Amino acid sequence: MHRRTLIIAEAGVNHNGDPARALALVDAAARAGADVVKFQSFRADKLATSDAAKASYQKVTTGSEQSQLEMLRALELSEDDEVRIAAACTAADITYMSTPFDADSATHLVRRIGVATLKVGSGDLTNAPLLLHLARFKLPIILSTGMATLAEVEQALGVIAFGYLGDARTRPTPADLANVLLDRAAWTELRTKVTLLHCTTEYPADPQSINLRAMATLRDAFGLPVGFSDHSRGIHIAAAAVALGATVIEKHLTLDRNLPGPDHRASIEPDELAAMIASIRDIEAALGDGRKVPAPEELPNRTVARRSLVAIRAIKSGERFTEDNLGVKRPGNGIPPIEYWTYLGRPAPRDYAANEALEP
Image (cartoon, rainbow, N blue to C red; front, side, top):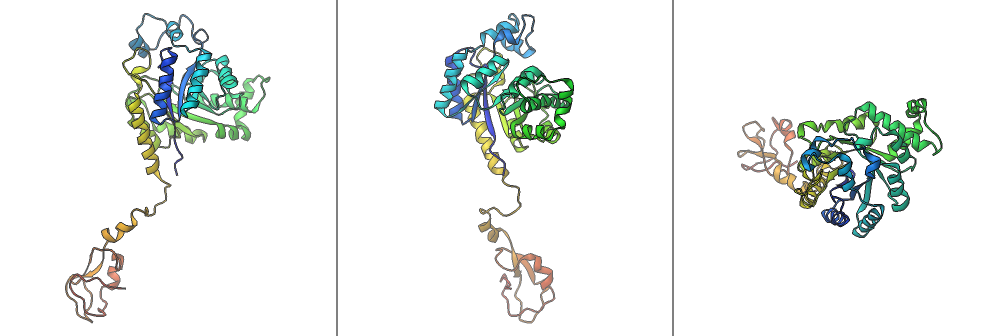
């Protein structure tokens, strides 16, 4: 049986720096049926320099006059804001999650808010110091792999495994990171705590760029649970990912795609989120347990849809069954058609009327 897919509504920075809008996103995600609503925790000055350019899609959605740093400053939430948002999640019965972009933000999320899982964005898959800091909390990690090669994913897993196995005082050497994945204990930790999300880091991502089959490649390469962080338009590709084995789906949520800001245009609105979740739950139910046996609902229909051996014309007692007088017709509550050739040439034990079923 396919386990229930964890559905993360990625509120991200779609609050535009407004705590009230962040609370509205919590409410929208909860009403749509998401399991998690996720934000982003960062201090702009720790994330980007004044020389950092915006991505092309950010220039399209927010203009090119601002620097990336200026844009990020306008999208920050304070630590107190995050505490209030997390409390609202508890009240709404939805899990609060946030992606930390620096060590202090991660410590705040774990120590003050008490998050149970840490999410790493694709941009930080190669940020080894941050990965090590996160792993040392010994919490489950969801790791997005957009823009990455398998070798880079393996390097990230080595850093995370070192953090899981070591203590906070040990600095890894290159040899440590090269050898840690040779330790069976490392894989035990990774397989119980780490989920890899396939992702295409483009907003929005065109279907031909998504390569959903790479999700299976990640699963086969590392033996870890996999999921999909979806930046495509619409909801159908996320649903397809579940059919292909995704255990986590992450999808950007906005209250209004026409709002200003970098991610709104690549997000879905609350009614679309609800439709996506409904589709995913239907797919989960449809996947079943993989055994090829009749569904209980099918059993009454077997008699109606299947056929039995019948006399296709009147047959006298002792007359032999032939292709001219023996056939198969509905209903299927008599001798099954697989016995057809067994009966050919046998003498009829009694008279049969046309269309009368043979009995065993």
